[in-house]
Amino acid sequence: MSTSAASIPVTRSTSPRFSEQLRDTAAFGAVFSDHILVADYADRRWGEPVIVPYGPLPLPPAPGVAHYGQGIFEGFKAFPRPVGAALFRPDANHARMNRTCQRMAMPEIPASIFIDGTSALVRVDQQWIPSKPGSALYIRPVMFSTGEPLGVRPSERYRFIIETCPSGPYFSGAVDLIAEDTYVRAFPGGTGAAKCAGNYAGSLVAAREAQARGFHNVLWLDGIERRFVEEAGLMNVAFVIDGTVVTPPLGGTILPGITRDSVLTLLRDMGVPVAERRIAIDEVFEAHAAGRLQGAAGVGTAATIAPLGRLRHKDQEITVPALASDSPLARVGAELAAIRTGQTADRYGWMVKV
Image 1 (cartoon, rainbow, N blue to C red):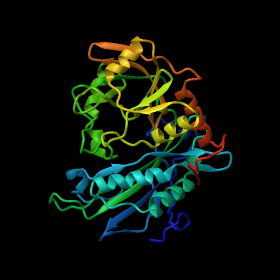
Image 2 (cartoon, rainbow, N blue to C red; image 1 turned 120 degrees about the horizontal axis):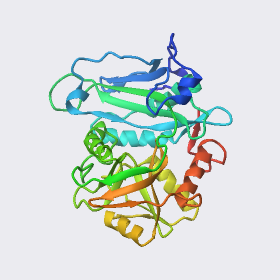
Image 3 (cartoon, one colour; image 1 turned 90 degrees about the vertical axis):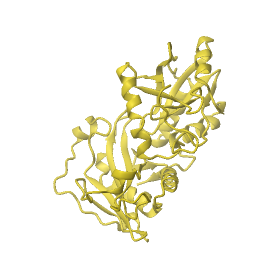
């Protein structure tokens, strides 16, 4: 396949919905931009991608994704720059999506569709990129099986879509979490490290029950001992204890976040001690009681750094200290924002110009 960003056919919308007010006031994920990219897989090869107006697409009555769950996705952002716009680490998201493809027995997606297709789509809808601080254009690649045979086996047909939406700050304040001891997000040998739809479907009831109790989401614990912290709702998690940033290690049950990797890279280069190790929920509460817990945050694409507020585990509850401006997590969040928006040099080659 010889697709390039410039060669992808574009059918422009005849009734665009764009307005600056809509772009700048829409809640996260509530409003999509005017165009999407679509590519179909059949006969063991990918067809050429096209960019078309956002709208309904025909599907067979029995798409495989509705029966056997072969549905995966990614998420990253395009940021406004002094001149134009740039994508943040699309190559890393492409690599992670292909690892998810391998785990879910789905065909891998060529860079000519994923990365070049993203560049082409963002160029078409570049006016949808918000310019307000803390805002960006959220990019959601999605792939799902469309084959109809009901035999339990990998599909022979798939559809890949990229859609975008203007995105402001995901959280307006500290995030309150309750440690989950009934449901399990992931276990060894499962799909915890894959970004597949089923992982999120399985988390919804826990989140709903947490919200009914006055919390934003759950703090996921490991699936074997129910002792060790793994993720903060839909994000990776990090704690500041005695000046060291502690985060659970990757090992198959935790999603390898691109923002997580970026944050850890920056922290180490800033000279901040970093420990990727198992951390028990009891250790978090003991560190708080001893005055050694200096902050904590969820780390993810949507929020980047989301400070944690209340944490509850069984009959105990603490309030995590707020992130001061000199906290390593606050500092790394500011540094990452400066790189993304072009206010400081991109010494890692993370930004890809559109």
